[in-house]
Image (cartoon, rainbow, N blue to C red; front, side, top):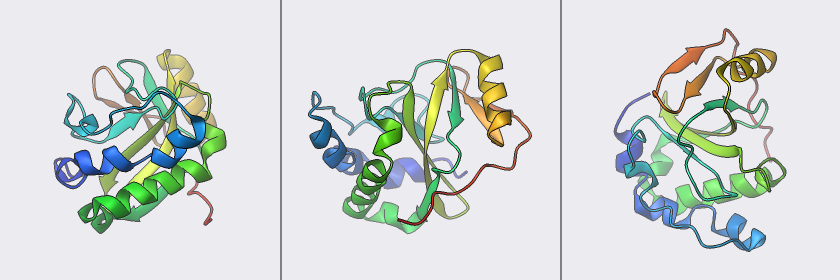
Length: 162
């Protein structure tokens, strides 16, 4: 993961637009996403709930198997294209995000790609590690400390092509 690239390429323009169609379909209270990546702890990536419009402040993030998508890193150079890609991703995976305040959209840049996936926010470390092991995840993320906790998996599976 290359720190700083996500911030430079995914500024306020992206999050001002990403999720618009998802939010419009749900008719929620409007959410300001422009400063999401400038908040403390955002340098390595982000987690954001499309349902509540908030970032988690504690707990452990565990990815959902089979829903990870990747985009070429250069998509970050075009905030409109990145926002559209994330919005399309949210709509394709609406069943996972809708009405679950513990489900978040997570994203990071690694190996020349923007990776996004739904992630559960789980309060208990033990429960998070167990779920991650049961779903073949490599690691979980400790929101409060910013640490990754290895869980021994291979990473689950990528989202099927739409």
